[in-house]
Each structure stands twice: as C-alpha cells, then as structure tokens.
Length: 364
Image 1 (cartoon, one colour):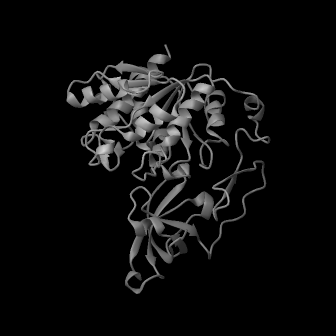
Image 2: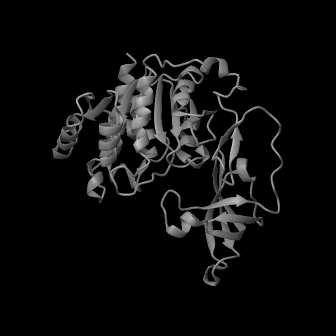
Image 3: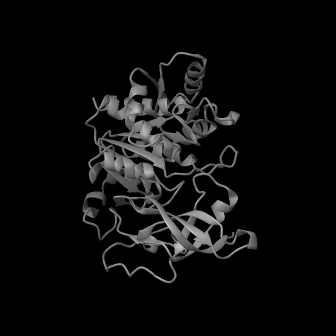
C-alpha cells in the first residue's frame, strides 16, 4: 500500500460547492519533469481548512497519477503552514474513515449523545416505506426524476453507503439536489461522512431517513466512484444487494433500480449489468420489486427478459415509459454515468427513473 505524495502551491481557485473547494496547484516536489506543472486538486475545508492562493499544500496524487475517472483529483491532505483551528468541544464519538490519517469524528443520529438516540435506540420498522436501491451514484438524480413525475410532493431522502467516495461533500449531485429541494436530507452511513445525518450502519441510516428526516421514499446508493475488478464478486456494488436485504428486514418495500446500458463498450455491462445480476439475483435474499419499462425495441425486450430470469422471489414490475424522458430533462444536476450523458446512454437513466416512478406509485 502506497500513497504518491506531492507538495505544491495553490495558484488559483476553481469551482466550490457545499463542503468542497476545487483548486489548481503548481507542483514543487516530485520528478523533475513534473516540477512547475499545474494540477487540479480538491480540498474539503471541514477536514483541512480553506485554501487560498499562495498556500503551500500537501497532496495525495495517487488517483491522479493512475488516471482514474471519478477519483482523478489530487487531494489536499493538509495546509501545513496554516492549520485549521481545533473544532469546538461537543458530543459525538462515531469515528469515520477510521484509522486513516484523515479520520474524522462525528455525532451520529444513532449515537448515545444524539437527541435522536431515543427514537432510534429500539427502532426496527420502516412501516412499508419504499426504499429504492441503485448500484451507481449516477442513478440517484434519475431515480428522483421518476419519483417526482409520479409523486411530486413526496419527501425523498438519500442514504449514502461507503462503497465509493466517503465524503458526501465530494458529490456535486448531492449539493445540487439538496439546493433544488429534490432531496430533503442526505444520510451518510458506515465509513461515509458529511451528510445532514450520520449513522453507524445502513440499517440505522434507513431508520434515520424515515424516523428523523421524515422520508416518504428513501434512495440508497454508494457515493461517487465505483470499485470494479472485472470479476463476478469484486465490485463495490455488491452492497446494493445488502441494502435491499436491510430494507426488507426493517419492514420497508425494497425496490431494485437495475443498472443497464445500451452504450457500454464492455459486454458484461450491456443490457442488465452483471453487477445487478449478482447484487439482485444472488445477494438480495429477500423478495424485491424490480421495475422495468414498457419501452419498445429489441434492447428493452432483452432487459425485460433478463429481469424475468432473476430468481422467482423477486417481482418484476412493468412501468410505463411515457413522461420519463420529460422528467429526466428537469434534473437540476447533470446526468452522467461512466462519462456518458442522457443522449449517449438513455436506457441507463430510463431504468433508474422507472424505479423512482414505481416507488411513487407505492405511496398510493
């Protein structure tokens, strides 16, 4: 295990959003050919303080050096000459990003010191709340678009698992969806942090979404980024099946948003992705609703056939496509999955929106 370190000087600031500051920094250490090169970096002020032009920064450039997509930033680890002040004393003992150099302590909604602890201490019932679970973070705005097309007044809460990015602040989508009122709250679970509510597990995250944040519908997905190894079981989206089980155990109505693609160059992700076939078909042991659309054409015929080949414990639900394209066009944040937008991979967003529409119909 290694980290590729660099020191640099902040040359200019870029875009900022809730909890994140994008910046550009000129490298002052590393191989000679890299000295003086300007790189794009990301700082989370709650962790490291707020950078300004001229600051010396310590960077983790491991992902940038490997050319990763979602993770392809240099990350600010510290402003060594201008450390942030100590946080004020207060309650909370949930440690997240545990035993990493940037572990952070938060007050969990399920923490003994929380005002919500009495509500959550013995809670174990979602009372039939629809819980839409998606593999990829990019599905979240599409699920919400479908939900709003069916139930525009439904209160939606996003529960973020720790399979991708750990800081909720990394997600521009979450910031934009919160600002637009498409989600009432973000709940960060497990090792993820920075949501409106923090919890120790997905189970308490679901309960907090319902009992504390007042969700009518809960949407669950990992943060931005997705770990995949090209193997049957080696991908972070396996946790989608575990989240579906959690929703069922807690008396929710689990809904699986299938990951599909009509444009992915990799055969294992075309049609219904092998990620969904494994997470829903093998990991989700409780019966769940699996929405598909009534869209015409050979591609969608194939998606419906793949869905119906899932284990009989699951219920395939055909959802009308009509109106979903218009709903997707209203998204307040950019629709993009694996670098492809709505025009390039319409089916990916359409199936996610169908899951949201079905959740809205479950509200009655």
